[in-house]
Length: 417
Image 1 (tube, rainbow, N blue to C red):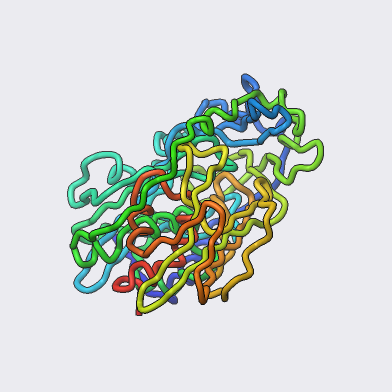
Image 2: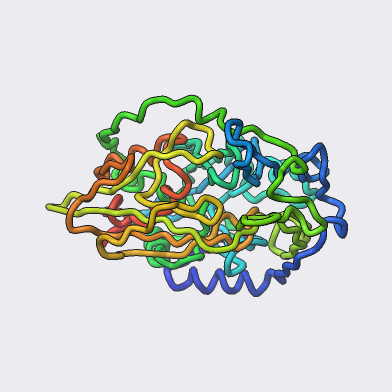
């Protein structure tokens, strides 16, 4: 008999813990020479299948001493949600996902979160759950919308991921580690750090939940984008790892010679709940924690949010929308954090656990009594922010992730009281 598992708020926590307990999870740091799947090939660290991702170097063409250690994955990752409307509730199909680099081992992810190498089974394991629903016509599932979104621009070089949303006629049977969660249940854990993974938070932030609930088009008011500056896209060039002067290849991975917080370690990972039960891979490591802050101002029932246009060396467009303030160990902000206003919501959330080892960032929303000005910043009304979130490759990953904390403000009919 095919089973459909559903849950309410408190049960989400229990299901995650039960899945974690049954996963037989293990992670240990190993050496490059102790495994045979990842090699230094043509100057980069690469999987022997040529799939998944590569570890590369970047160098500033104008300032040669400006070097970066990056992940390169030109194939877009496929991320998506299957949604079902049942009477007066919306349900979303979630995955309790164990990842080698997750803070806390396990977090909820979207219905699908997969690179082409995974869903094409280059790993030789079992098929990615529900991949057919997203990659071909599937009876009873209908594409609502999709967009292309930036990945982390200071860690990935020109990587994007697709966000797909499917509407199911009815709740489809749940495979292992999958569960249907109501929006009410998701709202109950929205402010719980390292519980909903970063890709799920991004997908939740990008979708127009209130427009979907009302089945109505919303009149959104975009603002003009900043002037074009094509030089930003050719500022850096990819180089072999051995040409980096500030990192070196060792049996431990790629380690800094001095002064850098980021490195690449080699890990062996096992979990019975994944497509492959054990494998070895590089993980991007970071010392320290990042900080993203977003200011918002509310007056007479209207909310506004302070965002800014900026550029990270790894994004594929000349600029993107970022939170009011952003700093990370690999891209430190020389300016101090914002102190104005009162913190109304905050979480600590790690970056994607399939590539990054417990790389945490603190997301902080602060409410201010009066609007302030910052360099390259401007205030967006809620409908304007929703417009930019829905559009392709405009909002940075950090902007989308912090916007998940705004869901009760941006979509009060669905996520509000």
